[in-house]
Image (cartoon, rainbow, N blue to C red):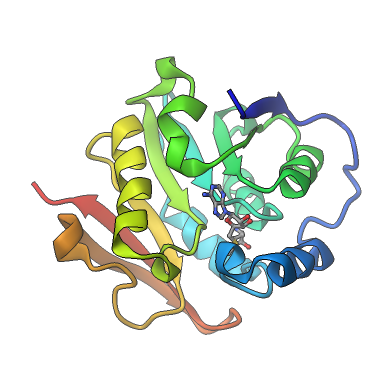
Length: 201
Ligand SMILES: C[S@@+](CC[C@H](N)C(=O)[O-])C[C@H]1O[C@@H](n2cnc3c(N)ncnc32)[C@H](O)[C@@H]1O
């Protein structure tokens, strides 16, 4: 298994959560993988966290956590850290996340392999999946790989995706999804919407 799962420790707690420098370096290295030049703003993170649902026996999964600004907003909204699972493909970022998210489960890996990354006993026990990966920049077949991976671990739940597009960032009909634009904020660079996608019944 190429993923390493670790509980964050006390290491680097004073580190700047947004870590704009790390984010910018990764954007320079791979702009398509990052999709943005700066981390999401506090206003956008709050709106995403407000759309997150999880019963006490469920976890929340965040894909593409970057420097952890949304993860932090989820914890500030009261999600216990042990019920937050974040998946990040870039090793430096996963290490940063372990330092700034004590108690959360940080998984270094490719979200397209979600069924292998999330422990089997938690499949079907996911209240919300937050997608930070810029799916809008990917071809349809690649988008499908992420959507199918999410459906495999969280059947019927769908996911939350934030986007700078005014209209749906995903071709929802072709994906068999129902879209809902839940929120918008001008207080982000660029202004952003929060979309919820659920499998059509
Ligand atoms: C736009 S950044 C989002 C960061 C953060 N959530 C935020 O809002 O500031 C996208 C993140 O997705 C990660 N990523 C891209 N492809 C991925 C994949 N296949 N699996 C896991 N993470 C991925 C990137 O490394 C990057 O950290």
